[in-house]
Image (cartoon, rainbow, N blue to C red; front, side):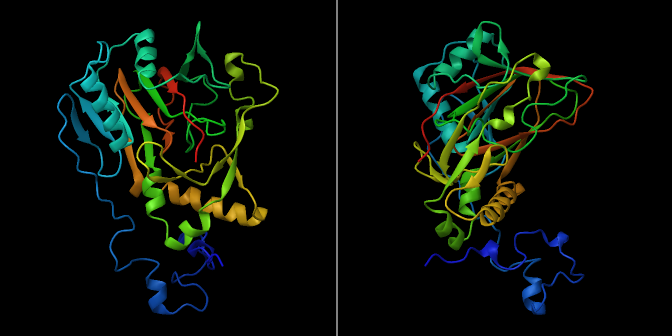
Length: 326
């Protein structure tokens, strides 16, 4: 028999602040058990031990947090990369999940060429692109925009049967303050789940649906398609390069877990969304003009902050194709 996940015990799906118990105690709970809602004696929820690999030879690494994110130095992406440098960028991405390059001055063609070093390029099913360059997605928000890209937590185009491996965002113009992007490690989200929850989720799949794209790009004059991608993916996926397990559901695209009642699916997904967005798993990148972020969609979710109105944030994204999650 599969054990009942910890989150399904009474009241655990909802934040403590939303429960109407003045002392923070569930009905029938002892004072001692109530106190464990506020603190524990077993250390932090996430006990992350970073991989300590060999030193880098051709690039520098400045980690944003021990869990996720690193700024890369010593690289000019406007010039051809040597094999050793390219190998170390691959390694830096695998070890840090999202990597950042500042002060890069590259053309659209150089942006595309950099993406092709990591695989075939993906064409977005809905978003606008630069003229004659369907692989070069437009990222733009200003005072007249009805919306901004990526305002909610998501993994890019997870509704595709073979979702993108990685995304490479180049911001040319950014606001004086604000417009940060938050990134969250889904390795860490998986590691921090209870053993009971891991057992429950193992083998489950979920439906990811792209119908949310409908109407999103009308301000660019883009007509809706008859249908958008829809796919079934494992709730827990295994990274094809690192072999690590990662949580793979997100608010942006995941609609339901297959094979369980709708109310159970809603409750589990609500818990997993809240869990995945825990600040313990995150880094936050403050953009500067001509900076690049490169993240691994197979183990990362992200969210862009639209807190800079009426200023403008503008650039392009190149996305690298991926494989079917397993």
